[in-house]
Image 1 (tube, rainbow, N blue to C red):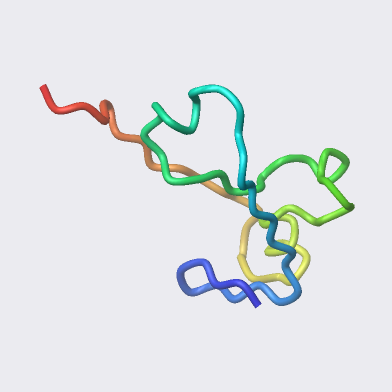
Image 2 (cartoon, rainbow, N blue to C red; image 1 turned 135 degrees about the vertical axis):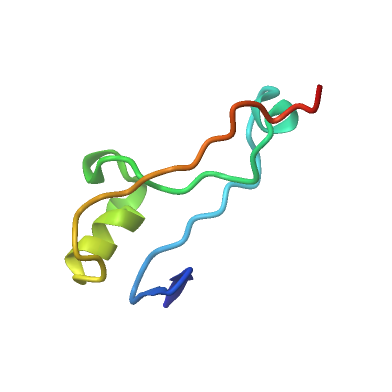
Length: 75
């Protein structure tokens, strides 16, 4: 079971990336990647997180959103 806020997702696969080439993960201002791709693009037929949430009827509406700051840099 995986937990995101107050949502418990049963049977959700979890994949860990231990090597990423290039500088994206070195220079970027984020902590990780959450699998929100299309199921047809998933490795090993793993169901993406939000698809699992919808399939388990854990949200009332099939809506996912992000809050983005205007800037991550202090000026």
